[in-house]
Length: 163
Image (cartoon, rainbow, N blue to C red; front, top):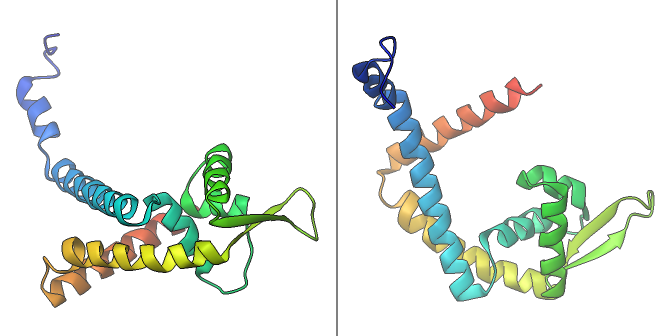
């Protein structure tokens, strides 16, 4: 398809090669590659996926807390059905247990099992090793602090804009 006169080759190339497109693409590519490295290491060394680790992180954050499947879906930005399937797999693997909420029978609470807590500690160490190697180590300490500060500001802006 040839560009129309109002869509010149130069205008298309300028838009496709803009600094914003390039910089955001670099962020997405880096995050995706890092996530792939983490997921591969976790599967190889612990037998769980990165998403399973994210569930365990959320469940182990506050000892004794039971988290609803709905809250997990929101926290992990997964669909309800995707969260249900993930928790099904984790329950089959002995990592989590489901309990009905005492206050609302429609709510399903999820908590880590003893095996899930053990798996979490092993996986957290693998995760930390990969993050240190590819996210922390390539940067000078000041650059790392500046990067994480900037990411926090971006996250804050995105959270505030949804209110």
